[in-house]
Image (cartoon, rainbow, N blue to C red; front, top):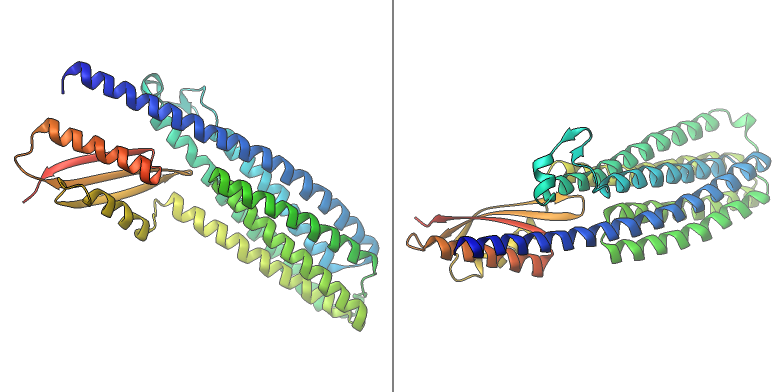
Length: 327
């Protein structure tokens, strides 16, 4: 392959990268719009539930209001992460310059920025865990002072019912958009909103039970269950984000990548394979064993063919292939 062909190939690769970059940025913008709707829905529910919890004397509804308050914080954090990930006009990363990369294709800089979506998703999980601990503590405290507990009023059922209906709608919109945009932030938001819908439904059932059976302690017990449900959701989001940031990748998915590379007749075997998450974008590093007598231009062509196949088959944005002689 001559220098002119190599330059043309590099230009072609840059064009492919910029097209993929614009696609990802468009997805992030769409995710931001959905998160704005989330903030509005959570804010409305929190205000309604806090007000009705005060006038209706319901510990469970107050816990559910705190739960939905965590949804506001989570959505705002995710929006900040998406905003940073979409910032393509600076040649630095948090004040640290990468001008050479910016002047060439900017791919390394942008892939690094995509990590911020994961970082803020992780912070969201931490916020949920902290709020869950507060809700559980308040519920336990109320059970220890049952003499001050009151049976909630019927009006609190209205707040729990409104919250359940709205959160089911928010969950459905987030799930649909998360799948369409393949966006981790919206997927996390969908998990959060589903758990919020379930807890609101549980809140409604608990308040109804307390009213029907005249059990003042049931309200406090239900608030503790709401707290544990929120805790489980927060831990799940924190765990997934932590694994992502720790460069963990599902071995079963990596095996699919390995098999696709070994399907090429010129590849005797894949010696090393490592996939990486950059936000929602996947990159791949491969070391393949080939015929020791293969010419350089043929090994280069093989690497480009593997990269193209990985992009078309799995949507991998960049595949680095190193060919070594088979022993």
